[in-house]
Image (cartoon, rainbow, N blue to C red; front, side, top):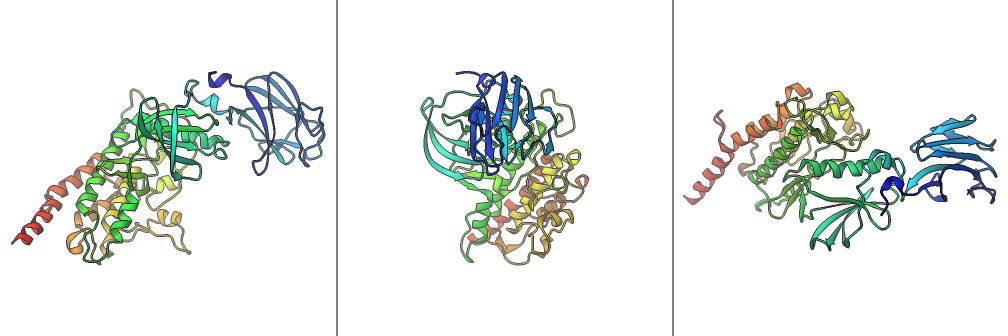
Length: 437
C-alpha cells in the first residue's frame, strides 16, 4: 500500500453545489481546462469557456493557474488572475462558476502536507448498526476481526471530508484523545481510510447516556417518584469529569467546549469526556510550567459554538485569555445544571446566547425555590451553589485557581464542610437514620 504522500494527485472540478464535474490524474506538465474535448481536463459547464484556463504542474507542491481570456474569468481566493499565478493545494480556485480542487485518495491534498505519512492501514472491520448519525460524521458499532472485539467506528461523511477544516478537526480529535490516555477519555485504536476512502477512527464502544440525557430524566421525574439519580450520584459523576479535566490540563490541553452533551456515562459507572477536536493545546501545564513534551496534533483555527456553558473569553475567541480557568467556568455551569436541573441561561427572541454570556446573565441559584426531585427536601446546598457561582465568574481570575482545587472543595462538602453546613453524605445518613426510627 503506497504511503499517502505518493498517492496519485488529482485535479477535481466541482460546481457550486459540490457536485463533481470532472476528475483528472495530474503529474508534471500543462493541462488546459475547458469545454473543448481536446483539452486535458474537459469541463462540461455553461460558465466555463471552450479553453478557459491552463494549469501548470511543476512539482507535487508547485502549481500555476493562468486564465486563457475566458468569458467568466478565473479567480484565486476571490482575486482575478493576471498571467500565470502561483497557487497552493489549499487555495480556492474558481473557473467561472466551478471550483478547482486538488485531492489524494478522495481527501483534500493539503491534508497530506499537514499530517504524518504513516497513518493509513488496511481495513479489518465488520460494520454493524448506526449508533449516531451526525452532520459531519457517523458512529457505527463494529467488530474487529483481528482482535475479536466490539468497538465503535466514527466515520466522516463523504460530503464533509471534502473540506480541509473538517478533516483536520476530525484527525485532531482522534490525536488529542489518544495522547491524553486517561480512564475518562475514550481510547483511540486506529485512524485510517476505509475502502471507500472515508476517513475513520476506532474507539471503545460504551453503552450508556450523556449527562444531558440523565439530567433531563431527573428533571422529568414525577412527584413522589424515586429519581434515576440523586444529587450524590450526580456529584460522583461530576467528580470523575473534574479528574479527567485536571489530567488534561496537566498535559496542556484545554477542552474549551465542555457541556453535559460532551459527557458520557456508561452502564457500569464509567464516565468519559468527549469531543476534543476544538481543544486548545498549549505548551504549559495547569500551573503554567513549561511541558517537557507538549502534545503534537493537527492545526485548527476553528472555535466551538457558543452555549450556556461557554466561558466569555472562549465566546469572544480571545485565544490569549483562554486557560484552564475557561474549563472551570464550564464545570461551574455544569454544576449549576446538576444543582438546579436548568441551564444557567436560556436565550430568548430578544437576547441570543452570545449576548447573555457576554453580559453574564446567569439566573441566581437562590431564585430556585421549588422542590427538586434529586435532593431531599428540595433545598440546594449553599456551599455548592456558591462554588458553582464563583466558578462562573466573568473574570477568569475570580474563578477557582485550578480544577484540582475546585474538585477538593466539592469533596470537602461531601465529607462535611468546615463552615458547618452538613455534608451531603451526612445529610443522607441522617435522613436514613430518621427513617429507621
